[in-house]
Length: 111
Image (cartoon, rainbow, N blue to C red; front, top):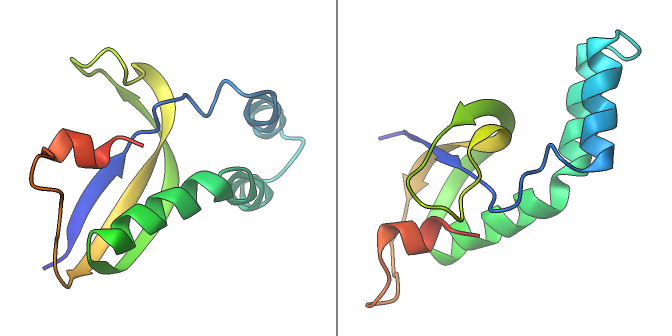
């Protein structure tokens, strides 16, 4: 069974100078949407690798990940609210999950 999950970085990605510049460039038609998404994937590559490692450690074997801009609001103050880039995770197969016994789901998803 396929699952769709959003991973929200604890530090807003869109507030970095590189991301603000990319957003401006695409809004002002200085770069195409295709170029924007290629550069976006390059900019967030470190975060994507971190998420991928967490998923592998949790036993998730088959997934894809795409950065998306969303407006969210959460009760937890450490999670940024408002418009931000999140990662849409399409989880296709989970082999096994071995979370720490004391961990809760929100703890496992914070990175």
